[in-house]
Image (tube, rainbow, N blue to C red):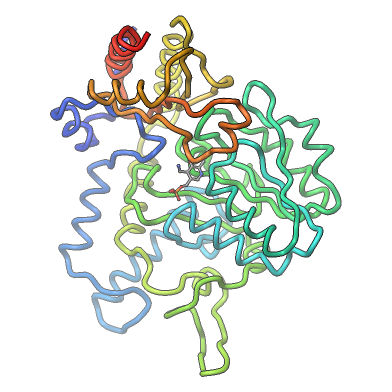
Length: 401
Ligand code: PMP
Protein backbone atom coordinates (compact mmCIF):
# COMPACT_ATOMS: atom_id res chain seq x y z
CA UNK A 1 0.00 0.00 0.00
CA UNK A 2 1.27 3.49 -0.86
CA UNK A 3 0.83 6.38 1.53
CA UNK A 4 0.78 9.66 -0.32
CA UNK A 5 0.88 12.86 1.69
CA UNK A 6 -1.82 15.34 0.66
CA UNK A 7 0.17 18.03 2.50
CA UNK A 8 3.47 17.56 0.68
CA UNK A 9 2.58 20.15 -1.95
CA UNK A 10 2.31 22.81 0.79
CA UNK A 11 6.06 22.57 1.49
CA UNK A 12 8.17 24.15 -1.26
CA UNK A 13 11.34 22.99 0.47
CA UNK A 14 10.43 19.38 -0.21
CA UNK A 15 10.02 20.01 -3.95
CA UNK A 16 13.37 21.83 -3.96
CA UNK A 17 15.09 18.95 -2.18
CA UNK A 18 13.52 16.39 -4.51
CA UNK A 19 14.78 18.41 -7.50
CA UNK A 20 18.23 18.14 -5.92
CA UNK A 21 17.83 14.37 -5.63
CA UNK A 22 17.36 14.46 -1.86
CA UNK A 23 15.00 12.37 0.25
CA UNK A 24 14.44 14.25 3.49
CA UNK A 25 14.03 11.97 6.50
CA UNK A 26 15.55 14.21 9.17
CA UNK A 27 12.57 16.25 10.36
CA UNK A 28 13.27 15.52 14.02
CA UNK A 29 16.40 17.67 13.55
CA UNK A 30 14.47 20.42 11.79
CA UNK A 31 11.36 20.45 9.64
CA UNK A 32 10.62 22.02 6.25
CA UNK A 33 8.38 25.10 6.19
CA UNK A 34 4.91 25.40 4.71
CA UNK A 35 4.03 28.09 2.16
CA UNK A 36 1.95 30.06 4.71
CA UNK A 37 5.06 30.33 6.92
CA UNK A 38 7.14 31.61 4.00
CA UNK A 39 4.36 34.09 3.10
CA UNK A 40 4.17 35.34 6.70
CA UNK A 41 7.94 35.89 6.88
CA UNK A 42 8.03 37.75 3.56
CA UNK A 43 4.91 39.70 4.53
CA UNK A 44 6.49 40.85 7.77
CA UNK A 45 9.77 41.92 6.19
CA UNK A 46 8.31 43.37 2.98
CA UNK A 47 5.54 45.44 4.55
CA UNK A 48 7.76 47.65 6.70
CA UNK A 49 9.26 46.35 9.91
CA UNK A 50 9.22 48.00 13.32
CA UNK A 51 10.24 46.98 16.81
CA UNK A 52 7.60 45.72 19.24
CA UNK A 53 6.39 47.43 22.42
CA UNK A 54 8.66 50.42 21.85
CA UNK A 55 7.03 53.24 20.01
CA UNK A 56 3.77 55.03 19.39
CA UNK A 57 4.00 55.10 15.60
CA UNK A 58 1.71 53.14 13.31
CA UNK A 59 4.19 50.48 12.10
CA UNK A 60 5.21 49.70 15.70
CA UNK A 61 1.59 49.38 16.72
CA UNK A 62 0.87 47.09 13.77
CA UNK A 63 3.85 44.82 14.51
CA UNK A 64 3.14 44.79 18.26
CA UNK A 65 -0.45 43.72 17.53
CA UNK A 66 0.76 40.92 15.25
CA UNK A 67 3.33 39.83 17.84
CA UNK A 68 0.86 39.77 20.72
CA UNK A 69 -1.81 38.04 18.68
CA UNK A 70 0.80 35.37 17.87
CA UNK A 71 1.28 34.93 21.61
CA UNK A 72 -2.48 34.51 22.02
CA UNK A 73 -2.52 31.96 19.22
CA UNK A 74 0.30 29.92 20.77
CA UNK A 75 -1.65 30.00 24.05
CA UNK A 76 -4.82 28.73 22.35
CA UNK A 77 -2.90 26.06 20.48
CA UNK A 78 -1.29 24.74 23.67
CA UNK A 79 -4.58 25.18 25.57
CA UNK A 80 -2.80 27.44 28.05
CA UNK A 81 -5.07 29.36 30.42
CA UNK A 82 -3.81 32.74 29.19
CA UNK A 83 -1.37 34.37 26.73
CA UNK A 84 0.51 35.63 29.80
CA UNK A 85 1.69 32.03 30.31
CA UNK A 86 3.63 32.12 27.01
CA UNK A 87 7.23 33.37 27.06
CA UNK A 88 9.03 33.63 23.73
CA UNK A 89 12.60 32.35 23.72
CA UNK A 90 15.13 31.46 21.01
CA UNK A 91 14.24 27.76 21.23
CA UNK A 92 13.83 24.79 23.55
CA UNK A 93 17.45 25.08 24.65
CA UNK A 94 17.02 28.68 25.75
CA UNK A 95 13.69 27.90 27.43
CA UNK A 96 15.31 25.17 29.53
CA UNK A 97 18.30 27.36 30.40
CA UNK A 98 15.92 30.15 31.39
CA UNK A 99 14.28 27.68 33.78
CA UNK A 100 17.55 26.37 35.18
CA UNK A 101 18.70 29.91 35.99
CA UNK A 102 15.29 31.37 36.83
CA UNK A 103 14.55 28.63 39.38
CA UNK A 104 18.06 28.47 40.84
CA UNK A 105 16.96 30.30 43.98
CA UNK A 106 14.59 27.41 44.78
CA UNK A 107 17.29 24.73 44.79
CA UNK A 108 19.35 24.22 47.94
CA UNK A 109 22.35 22.03 48.72
CA UNK A 110 21.24 18.41 49.01
CA UNK A 111 18.07 18.91 46.94
CA UNK A 112 17.41 16.60 44.00
CA UNK A 113 16.68 17.33 40.38
CA UNK A 114 15.27 14.31 38.56
CA UNK A 115 15.73 13.65 34.83
CA UNK A 116 15.82 10.43 32.80
CA UNK A 117 18.52 8.44 31.05
CA UNK A 118 17.29 9.44 27.59
CA UNK A 119 17.28 13.21 27.83
CA UNK A 120 18.63 15.37 25.02
CA UNK A 121 21.66 17.38 26.18
CA UNK A 122 19.33 20.42 26.23
CA UNK A 123 17.35 18.81 29.04
CA UNK A 124 20.40 17.40 30.81
CA UNK A 125 23.20 19.97 30.83
CA UNK A 126 21.23 22.95 32.21
CA UNK A 127 20.12 20.77 35.17
CA UNK A 128 23.55 19.19 35.61
CA UNK A 129 25.11 22.65 35.77
CA UNK A 130 22.41 23.93 38.13
CA UNK A 131 23.07 20.95 40.41
CA UNK A 132 26.80 21.74 40.35
CA UNK A 133 26.20 25.42 41.15
CA UNK A 134 23.92 24.59 44.09
CA UNK A 135 25.50 21.34 45.37
CA UNK A 136 22.28 19.59 44.51
CA UNK A 137 22.07 16.04 43.20
CA UNK A 138 21.07 15.05 39.68
CA UNK A 139 19.00 11.85 39.87
CA UNK A 140 18.66 9.86 36.64
CA UNK A 141 15.59 7.67 36.11
CA UNK A 142 16.46 4.39 34.37
CA UNK A 143 14.69 3.02 31.29
CA UNK A 144 12.90 -0.19 30.51
CA UNK A 145 14.27 -2.03 27.44
CA UNK A 146 11.38 -0.54 25.42
CA UNK A 147 12.80 2.95 25.98
CA UNK A 148 10.13 4.03 28.47
CA UNK A 149 11.07 5.34 31.88
CA UNK A 150 10.84 2.60 34.51
CA UNK A 151 7.90 3.73 36.68
CA UNK A 152 8.75 1.45 39.60
CA UNK A 153 12.20 2.97 39.78
CA UNK A 154 10.68 6.44 39.41
CA UNK A 155 8.38 5.82 42.38
CA UNK A 156 11.45 4.90 44.44
CA UNK A 157 13.69 7.73 43.22
CA UNK A 158 11.27 10.66 43.36
CA UNK A 159 11.19 11.60 47.01
CA UNK A 160 10.98 14.38 49.59
CA UNK A 161 14.23 16.03 48.39
CA UNK A 162 12.99 16.21 44.78
CA UNK A 163 12.58 19.87 43.85
CA UNK A 164 12.07 19.38 40.15
CA UNK A 165 11.36 16.69 37.55
CA UNK A 166 12.41 17.42 33.93
CA UNK A 167 11.46 14.85 31.29
CA UNK A 168 11.09 14.80 27.53
CA UNK A 169 7.62 13.95 26.27
CA UNK A 170 8.77 12.05 23.17
CA UNK A 171 12.32 10.77 22.91
CA UNK A 172 14.29 12.21 20.00
CA UNK A 173 16.33 8.99 19.81
CA UNK A 174 13.97 6.11 20.60
CA UNK A 175 10.63 7.66 19.62
CA UNK A 176 8.88 6.55 22.81
CA UNK A 177 6.17 8.56 24.52
CA UNK A 178 7.09 8.84 28.16
CA UNK A 179 4.47 7.91 30.79
CA UNK A 180 3.94 11.49 31.92
CA UNK A 181 0.42 10.82 33.22
CA UNK A 182 1.98 8.52 35.82
CA UNK A 183 5.27 10.38 36.32
CA UNK A 184 4.06 13.94 36.89
CA UNK A 185 1.80 13.01 39.86
CA UNK A 186 4.78 11.32 41.54
CA UNK A 187 6.61 14.66 41.45
CA UNK A 188 3.53 16.66 42.44
CA UNK A 189 2.98 14.43 45.47
CA UNK A 190 6.39 15.68 46.65
CA UNK A 191 5.50 19.32 45.81
CA UNK A 192 8.19 19.29 43.12
CA UNK A 193 7.97 21.39 39.96
CA UNK A 194 7.44 19.56 36.66
CA UNK A 195 9.17 20.48 33.41
CA UNK A 196 8.35 18.81 30.10
CA UNK A 197 10.68 19.05 27.11
CA UNK A 198 8.12 19.11 24.33
CA UNK A 199 10.55 19.69 21.44
CA UNK A 200 9.54 16.44 19.73
CA UNK A 201 6.20 15.64 21.35
CA UNK A 202 4.49 18.88 20.40
CA UNK A 203 5.01 18.07 16.71
CA UNK A 204 3.04 14.86 16.88
CA UNK A 205 -0.26 15.90 18.34
CA UNK A 206 0.41 16.16 22.06
CA UNK A 207 -0.15 19.85 22.58
CA UNK A 208 -2.92 19.94 25.20
CA UNK A 209 -1.16 21.31 28.26
CA UNK A 210 -4.35 21.41 30.34
CA UNK A 211 -4.58 17.65 29.96
CA UNK A 212 -0.85 17.18 30.54
CA UNK A 213 -0.85 19.25 33.72
CA UNK A 214 2.85 20.17 33.85
CA UNK A 215 4.18 23.39 35.37
CA UNK A 216 6.51 24.22 32.46
CA UNK A 217 6.74 23.12 28.84
CA UNK A 218 9.41 23.98 26.27
CA UNK A 219 9.28 23.79 22.48
CA UNK A 220 11.13 24.94 19.35
CA UNK A 221 9.34 26.50 16.40
CA UNK A 222 11.72 25.05 13.80
CA UNK A 223 10.62 21.48 14.53
CA UNK A 224 6.99 22.57 14.29
CA UNK A 225 7.42 23.59 10.64
CA UNK A 226 8.05 27.19 11.75
CA UNK A 227 11.11 29.45 11.53
CA UNK A 228 14.25 28.77 13.53
CA UNK A 229 15.58 31.09 16.22
CA UNK A 230 12.32 31.08 18.17
CA UNK A 231 10.80 28.87 20.82
CA UNK A 232 8.33 28.91 23.65
CA UNK A 233 8.45 28.47 27.37
CA UNK A 234 4.98 27.83 28.74
CA UNK A 235 4.65 28.32 32.48
CA UNK A 236 1.45 27.70 34.43
CA UNK A 237 0.45 31.04 36.01
CA UNK A 238 1.69 30.63 39.57
CA UNK A 239 4.67 28.49 38.50
CA UNK A 240 5.81 31.16 36.04
CA UNK A 241 5.79 33.77 38.78
CA UNK A 242 8.49 31.75 40.61
CA UNK A 243 10.97 32.50 37.82
CA UNK A 244 13.52 35.23 38.31
CA UNK A 245 14.84 36.98 35.21
CA UNK A 246 17.91 35.38 33.74
CA UNK A 247 18.80 37.70 30.89
CA UNK A 248 18.69 41.43 31.40
CA UNK A 249 18.21 44.26 28.93
CA UNK A 250 15.67 46.45 27.21
CA UNK A 251 11.90 46.26 27.59
CA UNK A 252 11.84 44.01 30.64
CA UNK A 253 11.85 46.71 33.33
CA UNK A 254 9.27 49.11 34.69
CA UNK A 255 12.03 51.31 36.06
CA UNK A 256 15.83 51.16 36.09
CA UNK A 257 18.43 53.21 37.91
CA UNK A 258 22.17 52.70 38.35
CA UNK A 259 21.76 50.66 41.49
CA UNK A 260 18.30 49.16 41.12
CA UNK A 261 15.80 47.79 38.62
CA UNK A 262 12.14 46.95 38.92
CA UNK A 263 11.22 44.14 36.52
CA UNK A 264 7.98 43.55 34.67
CA UNK A 265 6.01 40.43 35.55
CA UNK A 266 6.22 37.50 33.12
CA UNK A 267 6.11 37.17 30.19
CA UNK A 268 7.59 40.65 29.45
CA UNK A 269 9.95 40.48 32.42
CA UNK A 270 11.50 37.32 31.00
CA UNK A 271 11.91 38.62 27.43
CA UNK A 272 14.92 40.93 27.53
CA UNK A 273 15.89 42.70 24.32
CA UNK A 274 14.34 42.62 20.87
CA UNK A 275 12.55 39.31 20.50
CA UNK A 276 12.64 37.17 17.34
CA UNK A 277 9.71 39.13 15.84
CA UNK A 278 9.66 37.55 12.38
CA UNK A 279 10.09 34.13 13.94
CA UNK A 280 7.14 34.59 16.28
CA UNK A 281 4.93 35.75 13.40
CA UNK A 282 6.13 32.78 11.30
CA UNK A 283 5.47 30.35 14.15
CA UNK A 284 1.96 31.70 14.42
CA UNK A 285 1.45 31.15 10.67
CA UNK A 286 2.67 27.58 11.07
CA UNK A 287 0.21 26.89 13.90
CA UNK A 288 -2.59 28.41 11.85
CA UNK A 289 -1.68 26.10 8.97
CA UNK A 290 -1.50 23.05 11.26
CA UNK A 291 -4.81 23.95 12.90
CA UNK A 292 -6.43 24.01 9.44
CA UNK A 293 -5.50 20.35 8.81
CA UNK A 294 -7.52 17.27 9.72
CA UNK A 295 -5.42 16.25 12.71
CA UNK A 296 -6.80 12.70 12.75
CA UNK A 297 -5.79 12.27 9.10
CA UNK A 298 -2.29 13.61 9.85
CA UNK A 299 -1.96 11.20 12.73
CA UNK A 300 -3.16 8.23 10.62
CA UNK A 301 -0.70 9.13 7.89
CA UNK A 302 2.22 9.44 10.31
CA UNK A 303 1.35 6.14 11.95
CA UNK A 304 1.09 4.32 8.64
CA UNK A 305 4.50 5.64 7.58
CA UNK A 306 5.98 4.77 10.94
CA UNK A 307 4.67 1.21 10.71
CA UNK A 308 6.22 0.92 7.24
CA UNK A 309 9.53 2.16 8.64
CA UNK A 310 9.55 -0.28 11.56
CA UNK A 311 8.47 -3.26 9.46
CA UNK A 312 11.18 -2.56 6.90
CA UNK A 313 13.92 -2.13 9.49
CA UNK A 314 12.93 -5.20 11.51
CA UNK A 315 12.80 -7.35 8.37
CA UNK A 316 16.49 -6.77 7.66
CA UNK A 317 19.18 -9.10 8.99
CA UNK A 318 21.51 -7.60 11.54
CA UNK A 319 19.49 -4.40 11.90
CA UNK A 320 18.54 -3.63 15.47
CA UNK A 321 15.98 -0.93 16.22
CA UNK A 322 16.60 0.85 19.53
CA UNK A 323 13.74 0.17 21.93
CA UNK A 324 10.12 0.11 20.83
CA UNK A 325 9.37 3.38 19.06
CA UNK A 326 5.77 4.59 19.19
CA UNK A 327 5.76 7.25 16.53
CA UNK A 328 7.59 9.69 14.27
CA UNK A 329 11.05 8.19 14.22
CA UNK A 330 13.24 5.16 14.75
CA UNK A 331 16.94 4.76 15.41
CA UNK A 332 18.90 1.65 14.59
CA UNK A 333 22.32 0.06 14.62
CA UNK A 334 23.64 -2.64 12.29
CA UNK A 335 25.79 -5.49 13.47
CA UNK A 336 29.45 -5.05 12.43
CA UNK A 337 28.75 -1.74 10.67
CA UNK A 338 29.81 1.64 12.01
CA UNK A 339 26.99 4.17 12.01
CA UNK A 340 29.12 6.90 10.47
CA UNK A 341 30.13 4.70 7.50
CA UNK A 342 26.49 3.88 6.93
CA UNK A 343 25.38 7.50 7.30
CA UNK A 344 27.98 8.51 4.75
CA UNK A 345 26.88 5.92 2.20
CA UNK A 346 23.24 6.90 2.69
CA UNK A 347 24.15 10.56 2.32
CA UNK A 348 26.00 9.84 -0.92
CA UNK A 349 22.80 8.30 -2.25
CA UNK A 350 20.75 11.40 -1.39
CA UNK A 351 19.18 10.05 1.78
CA UNK A 352 19.05 12.74 4.44
CA UNK A 353 19.02 10.85 7.74
CA UNK A 354 21.12 11.48 10.80
CA UNK A 355 23.93 9.32 12.18
CA UNK A 356 25.61 9.98 15.52
CA UNK A 357 24.79 10.33 19.18
CA UNK A 358 21.75 12.62 18.64
CA UNK A 359 22.83 14.97 21.45
CA UNK A 360 22.25 12.14 23.94
CA UNK A 361 25.72 10.84 24.72
CA UNK A 362 24.80 9.39 28.13
CA UNK A 363 21.96 7.44 26.46
CA UNK A 364 24.39 5.98 23.92
CA UNK A 365 26.60 4.88 26.82
CA UNK A 366 23.58 3.45 28.65
CA UNK A 367 22.69 1.44 25.53
CA UNK A 368 26.32 0.39 25.03
CA UNK A 369 26.59 1.86 21.52
CA UNK A 370 28.72 4.59 19.96
CA UNK A 371 25.90 6.01 17.88
CA UNK A 372 22.95 5.14 15.71
CA UNK A 373 21.19 6.11 12.50
CA UNK A 374 17.90 7.94 12.99
CA UNK A 375 15.14 8.11 10.40
CA UNK A 376 12.50 10.69 11.26
CA UNK A 377 9.19 11.39 9.60
CA UNK A 378 6.95 14.39 9.09
CA UNK A 379 3.51 14.92 7.64
CA UNK A 380 4.98 15.67 4.19
CA UNK A 381 6.77 12.32 3.85
CA UNK A 382 5.40 9.65 1.53
CA UNK A 383 5.75 5.89 1.35
CA UNK A 384 8.02 6.51 -1.63
CA UNK A 385 10.52 8.35 0.57
CA UNK A 386 10.83 5.23 2.70
CA UNK A 387 11.11 2.99 -0.34
CA UNK A 388 14.03 5.09 -1.59
CA UNK A 389 15.56 4.89 1.88
CA UNK A 390 15.32 1.09 1.99
CA UNK A 391 16.81 0.68 -1.50
CA UNK A 392 19.73 2.90 -0.45
CA UNK A 393 20.08 1.06 2.87
CA UNK A 394 20.29 -2.35 1.16
CA UNK A 395 22.88 -1.03 -1.28
CA UNK A 396 24.97 0.51 1.51
CA UNK A 397 24.83 -2.67 3.58
CA UNK A 398 25.88 -4.74 0.59
CA UNK A 399 29.00 -2.56 0.29
CA UNK A 400 29.76 -2.49 4.02
CA UNK A 401 29.23 -6.17 4.89
N1 PMP B 1 14.93 18.38 23.31
C1 PMP B 1 14.70 17.46 22.37
C2 PMP B 1 13.95 16.21 22.73
C3 PMP B 1 15.13 17.69 21.06
O1 PMP B 1 14.92 16.77 20.12
C4 PMP B 1 15.82 18.89 20.76
C5 PMP B 1 16.31 19.20 19.37
N2 PMP B 1 17.02 18.16 18.77
C6 PMP B 1 16.01 19.82 21.78
C7 PMP B 1 15.56 19.52 23.04
C8 PMP B 1 16.73 21.11 21.55
O2 PMP B 1 16.03 21.94 20.68
P1 PMP B 1 16.71 23.24 20.07
O3 PMP B 1 18.04 22.81 19.51
O4 PMP B 1 15.75 23.67 19.01
O5 PMP B 1 16.86 24.23 21.16
